[in-house]
Image (cartoon, rainbow, N blue to C red; front, side, top):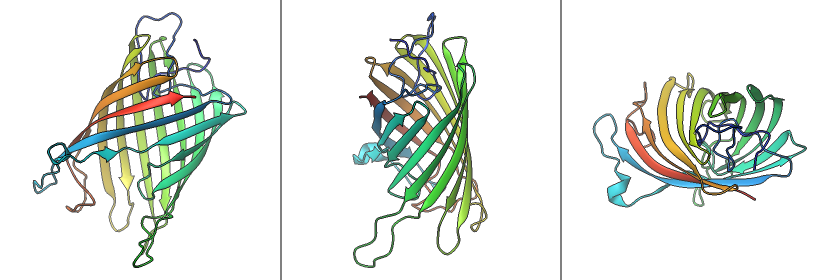
Length: 255
């Protein structure tokens, strides 16, 4: 089944396909959702590595598994998508909305806004866990040569924190190449300026490499390996682990 807006970037496909034809698509970098489409993604990962002083973070041996969060999306009126996600850096969950501004195959533009909700409080102290935050972003993406998808996302996050609010600015570059109709390689590079001037700006960098396999027209899996580089200016504590690897898998389904 060929969809008008399939593009490869987030979780991959490739090959000599004429015309271009990825179908599970949630992991495709430059895919456009369709009207009344409902989808979900979720996953888990192991983390291993060390902080700057060599403190081990080996979840594989300890048996700990990190939840990478779940996201649910619903598209209406073709160009609008609302979402709910449990993956947020500063709050337990977030809601969002995005709008497709341009939908050309070779070049597309999306605008989005998300609100991270810090709803949880410590039962004993009443202190809120996490911080409310607002993120706005634009994303350009497209398909090149039928089997390659690309995307660039630029985001700005404002965090309502105590004792000082702060900004984050981030950039994510994605590429996806399909070897066959149902198998693709996917790469993601991320660079962000975190906690800008609060009290010092952190420089956060990571690379993620994996494969995307479309098990059917509505379901796909994305196993990957991720490396998080040493965080420039970071304090060495449990909240800011440094220099680590992650092994994980994400799954997606369209209802």
